[in-house]
Length: 230
Image (cartoon, rainbow, N blue to C red; front, side, top):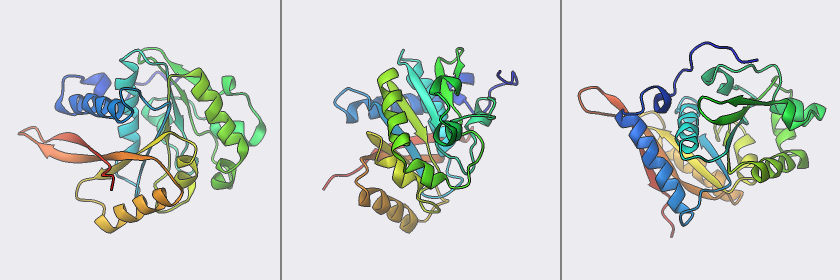
């Protein structure tokens, strides 16, 4: 059922020896040790605004986590502008929205990528009211079921500031990573995003600063900073 076109945007799969790929492996280690050596069972990756690289970040993070032997599922929770199916060249004719709206079984929407070692649930057809679907008990039940099946579940969500979807998801996962594109987003917007997450009691583990150019090749550098606790 997969589109066999080449996988794109996955530096950790196509060029694992680059500085950017190494930075993702460092990110993997940092996430592990925020939990005293244990990875969170569920982790959400989001951003304050669109275009900060959250989807590319979570896709590459999925690759390096799978390389450790963990069983992993990547869930595209962005039912407004879904992109995960494009990153992995998957079909999106059915997905999360079908499970939430039509009671489709999870087994019917899980797509496997054996060459990488991960499973993916795409967002599916765009529903009329994504936030209302996310806020249902069914969504929490889905995540609970997935975390019982997999070692770790990664959730890609919409940006925080435009819509409430990420706030809703953040109450259902064990940890949140905020992606910040260097030189693009205003500090005030980052602080507002952090405030919105904290307002609902989200466990914000840290931030990933991306698009920092280093060296003569201007490679993208991913830097992880743990949230400072007062």
